[in-house]
Amino acid sequence: MFPDLDSQSAALNARAGRCLAGGGSRSTIRTDPYTLYIREAHGAEVVDVDGNRLIDFINNYTSLIHGHCYPPIIEAVRRQLPNGCAFSFCHESEIVLAELLCERVPSFERIRFMNSGSEAVMNAIKLARAFTGRPKIAKCDGFYHGSYDPAEVSLISGAENSAQEDPPSRAYSRGTPQSVLDEVVVIPFNEPQHSQRILESHADELSCILLDTTCMRLGGNLVREDYLAMVTDVARSHDILLIFDEVVSFRLGYSGSQGVLGVQPDITALGKIIGGGFPVGAVAGRADVMSMFDAPVNGVAPLPHGGTFNANPITMAAGVAAMTDMTPASFEYLNSAGAKAREALTEVFKERGVTGQVTGVGSLFKLHLHDRPIVTLHDVGVSSESQSQVAALRLRLIDGGIFLGSGCFGCVSMATTDAHIEQLCTALAGALEKTGS
Ligand SMILES: Cc1ncc(COP(=O)(O)O)c(C=O)c1O
Image 1 (cartoon, helix red, strand yellow):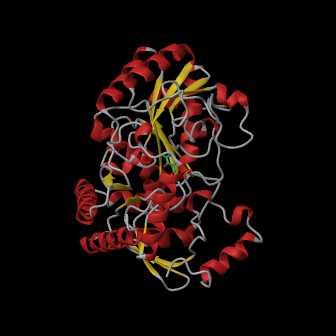
Image 2: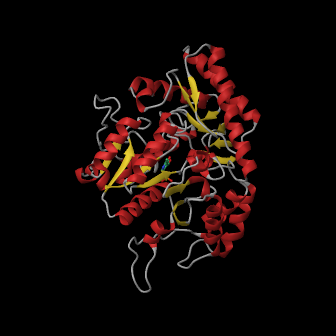
Image 3: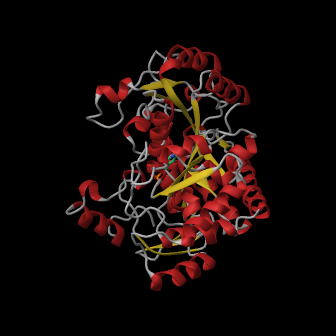
């Protein structure tokens, strides 16, 4: 079934290569030798243009918390569509989604919407710089925060270099100006002593510390408590703003990962699930910080922020429908399905006698082909050999009817059932057998 170089997907890849730069509009979804084209998707399943059915364990990279085509979302969008999809006026649905989210999360005193998680991270950083008047940001080595220049710095980590204790500020995209690299202080995740030393040596210039509490590259485990405590202390004692990137981790609970961890960041960047499957981003946080967006009458805000499609009523309607149905009981179901998946997959590695492990928290999971404990970036396989083994496993899983994200990262949705998890395990067993690993 996969790969099939005579398939319609393969033909569409060739056609796309003739008109689309890079063969498509999203580097992060590419698979080799070709990327699948999907015909339709319902619940936990997608069907490709060749009629192959796959159980979707990535759900548009964690954004579809109810799976595909959740009826209440379709209904909410269907109600809105004939009444307009975007206008240069306000719409009440923006307030409804804002109220819903602010009621759930104590640190969300105000919120503002945009169209992607990348924009949310960008605006969170701009907000911190506007509020503090300081130029620099700190972020963790190897962490992904979307495509804003400073947020991309050191996405390809320096972990394989000798300077592990002081990760270098490295460009990810060709053409990144040196001035951007100079504004980003890179710290090693979950290494409190080194990070504290680095943060304190730049404290006077730092506007914010940008943190993802569940980096998938590191297996999606929660940040170590002592590390989070150190980051919070340094931020508080030097008036540096703490930004949580909860674009993914907001799915950990009713109040996001900050609710699970019991920490209130100054600013939170959101995206994915809050748009009910439509393009979305949001920045939420302390009222005094968020007041940077306030414009005086006939004047300009300290941090002006426009966006043609910001808070468009389609996204807002879908977001309200999606989040309304994510009650505390729904998060319990989701997280217990995630735990079941992790346990069952771990059992497959054991039964097959294959060295590997399954990490993650809540509804997230990640497969690894080694059993080293994963705490810092140095514990994950950064060599191209280990990466290509995981990539090969992912392709064999596609052949077995299972779709995971790159690096064998996955998530369950509200549409995931025990039967889907069983099929995932059967496919993993088959895929491991084929490797002979
Ligand atoms: C942690 C994190 N932050 C930010 C982003 C960027 O979000 P978007 O793809 O909506 O721009 C992502 C996307 O996957 C992400 O995982």
